[in-house]
Image 1 (cartoon, rainbow, N blue to C red):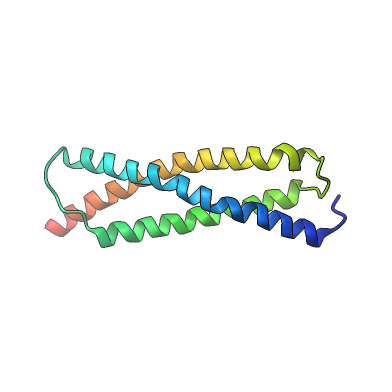
Image 2 (image 1 turned 180 degrees about the vertical axis):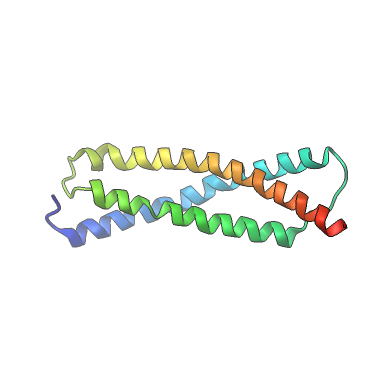
Length: 129
């Protein structure tokens, strides 16, 4: 039960927003790795030009959607959160959800990088026709 909702809400926002930067930074390497690896596989070493404008739009859109997904942490916070510092959620739940969410997001960023590479490949083929 939440006794002081205003302070609980402020603490929850402070907790999650401090970690949003870590979340975003953690997603950049797997997204780029997935893109670069599968971009090379698509062309099998053949020289090609990357349409940076097209790829950038997809990476920005992916970043925006990743942050929308991160915002679902607030739903979990207000479902399970308690303002008691000794509660399970405050001691372990937040950290477990953050780590689990970042690991899942890293996997999805790797898959997203792959998908952007495939979309760029087919975009290049359509432009050549």
